[in-house]
Amino acid sequence: MPRRIVPTTAPAQDRPGTPARPEGPAGDPTTFADASRSLLRRTLLEAARDLAADRPWKSVTMAAIATRAGVSRQTVYNEFGSRPLLTEALVMHELEEFLGAIESAIRSRPDDPAAALTAAMEVFLQAASEDALVAAVVREDGRDDLLPLVTSEGRPLLEYGAGRLAAMMRETWPVLPEAEAAFLGGTIMRLGLSYVVMPVGDDDRTATARGVADLVRPYVESLLARQGA
Image (tube, rainbow, N blue to C red):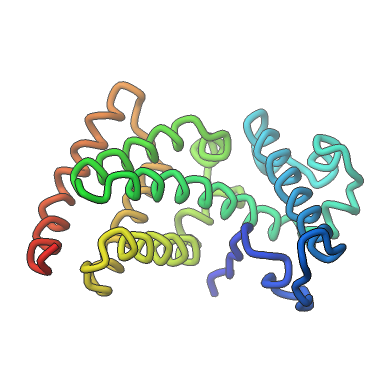
């Protein structure tokens, strides 16, 4: 059964196993505690990502992450529970970064779908080529636990990203039918994951982004024209 991946940006009360807390006004200790935990979580994930840039992921221990972040090993276990869960959280953390970049590129060009799609692919390909965790995935030989999360066990990642992109495209182009938005979101995610596993070189990045946009653009433009956008 595929593992369920929980977005790292979810509030603490929305994560499995965490009791719901009442919301309080700004400055409330509860709000401060949530903000502090969110900062801790991000710090730990960034420490893990930095370590992944220097060594095989299977040699990145919870103790090493704790040392890098300047906290105790127990703090890391308290936050994530286990190393496999930390690995899932790290992959989702990186996905959130990629999705944010793609969404910004598309939302900034709502009147020009062709330019929006080209910019989105360029942003994604650049981010993927520079990301330490992506480099760690590419270095793996299949025996570690990063690669399966974007390949054989990548369905939760795919479905979450596709849903996010579909919702964003419907906000940007409200006339886009729901089924077509879902198809587009899934297609972009599948393309994105394929370029993570087998990235293109820096010299080919712009041409690849334009080529992918040229493939998708007629479909998007025909949909928008059909709906009277």
